[in-house]
Image (cartoon, rainbow, N blue to C red):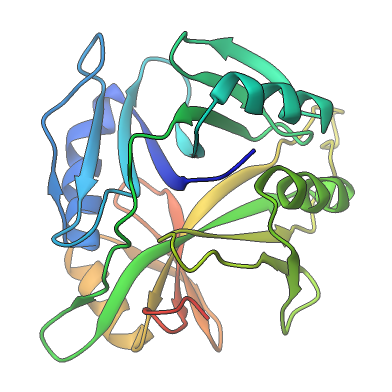
Amino acid sequence: MQVRWLSAFLDFPAEQFGPEVTFWRAIAGSTVSPPRGEHREFASLEPFFGDPHLRVQRIDDGPGGVHLDIHTDDPRSAATEALALGAASVADHGKYLTLASPGGMVFCLVPWEGEARKSRPIRWPGDAISIIDQVCIDCPRDLFDAEVLFWSQITGAATKATSRPELVALRRDPKLTLGILLQRLDEPARDAQGVPTRTRAHLDVATNSVADEVARHEDWGARVIVAHDRWTVMADPVGRRYCITSRNPRTGS
């Protein structure tokens, strides 16, 4: 499979869709495309420069979350590869296919439609620069190794050690806006009642000034959950968690 482009999809329940799109549009510094899909349930957050790498979806069931779209030349051939690597089939939508990783994180294989222009970071008043440029895949500890291997194999990207043992990055393709980071959580693959805990994901913002970026997000209704040395965990206005990280917004490093 050749990964031509990566998109992060924010999935919102219907009652949250409007306010959440407003918040994330503001945070990304983007406009919103006209709705599309059979039920007008999809839209893109369109950057001022570059092709969209953030998209939104109104869903009918569940709390929503973040999933990854892999844009490739032949989604059906890519699905065959993914299944051989341990993925599970979720749905066949004709034009695109929905699968789940070995740990249960949903992703889609979609046809590449020529996306190639990498987005540029936004410079905000006060000279802070930022961009939403990373999907962090959160893995229960018992599933972490299998998830790292799966995502490395399906994307063809080698793993890259970080300064923290619980974090493993996939080497970035410089042509793509989005990068992928995997995080080992402390939680087990099953809770105390024996219910499986699935792999899921959140978004990361890269910025040259975490403090300024946090203040800007708070102005839009987000709140700080916990502040670390190089990143701050945030909750958006409905409680969806994401991180503001001290990384180079131009390179992701």
